[in-house]
Image 1 (cartoon, rainbow, N blue to C red):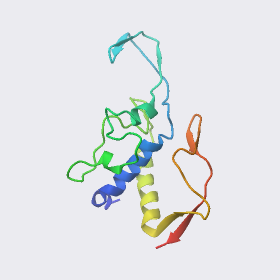
Image 2 (cartoon, rainbow, N blue to C red; image 1 turned 90 degrees about the vertical axis):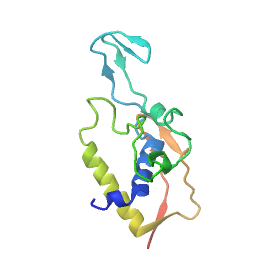
Image 3 (cartoon, helix red, strand yellow; image 1 turned 90 degrees about the horizontal axis):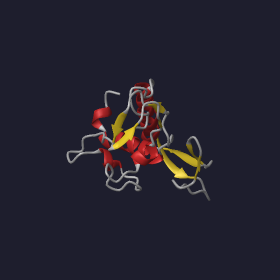
Image 4 (cartoon, rainbow, N blue to C red; image 1 turned 135 degrees about the vertical axis):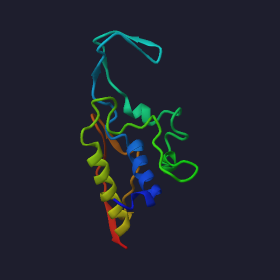
Length: 151
């Protein structure tokens, strides 16, 4: 974990994978506690609001090329990691994921150790596409095989 700041492109790639995949496309429903206005729309008290995380993660207001996998979405001009406001893989608001900090650490350690120690290749006769997924409560990829080649 001490080396995390030394490999910003690695961290940006992990963040971009979370954004691009949008594993959980819709967030947990919330309820308006008072009459309010959101984005110019009147929202009466008691209205159920469901955050559309997929839409946020593919909104051209936040992402230069929203349908292209590009880790540079998370890097500034100096190569430092930045988190744009349209990024919320762990939910939005006060009720976001309580395990977010632990999940971020585990993702970093898990993925960094895999790519440090292995080259990942498609299995013979296999291809993998971001379009190959089942859309349901989660966006889950179809089963596929990859080969881990030790470095």
